[in-house]
Image (cartoon, rainbow, N blue to C red; front, side, top):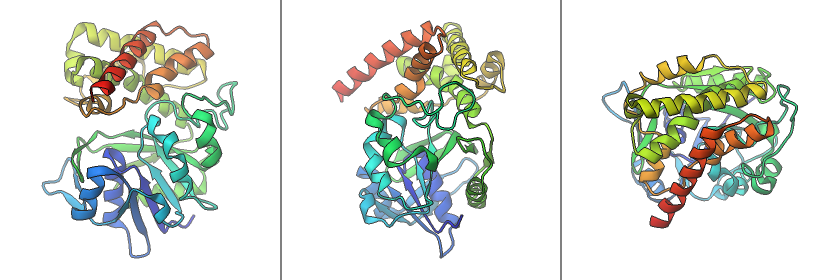
Length: 334
């Protein structure tokens, strides 16, 4: 796979961090561009994109092509989406405008992605589509699950000012084909990202990685939004940490019913969570910013897939009802 043009569609916290790293290492033959909007786009155009890395005293600043109209860019060899699950479907036409024969699309997503059941051999539901994740099947039709390379990100990041991103740690990204193959495309893309200074690993079980991360996301994101608490505060509160454990148990049960394999027990995952630090989750960041919350991929699909698999999820159902109402009231206030 020859990669000479890369567009990061949605250059927010994670997408922007990837864009900055790629642009800092790109040679003269590789063109890096971003699709962004609003004040963030204006700042990138005027002053470049700045990245504050966890172990660096000075920010990395890069200049790159930035636009809010993907139609102004040529078709790309590689597209990386930094959009949240609920933002993807409205962007389907814009992403599709960047595609040509052979274009691969890395989707950095939390929770259950729209392509989850494409070439799935672990459950009995191969090629099943969910309208909640992909209304009208626009992503499936316009982008195509066959182009996707799944990406699970273990990287704390936040847009602290327009055009300025702060990394909370030196994180890592796990890439995998929905088929489980370690394909030549996957190897070429991983090598390119590693060359840009990103911590990349590949896996033959991207679904297992998705569920393992979802154990934390399905609990901490909505609970932090409902309580406005950092992760350290949640884990220090016995009642909240017990609720986290109940959600994790439900997520694990649903995942296992669909054939997912978990590398950690609930107890191990809880212990790991006690050492993450004072992180403000992405859902809490969005709540404070008055943005729509990423509910369906993180919580709604745990409930929906629980029903599909006949696995009860009472705690997740309660949290889903509460955070859905919170989102509605927050949007009304905004």
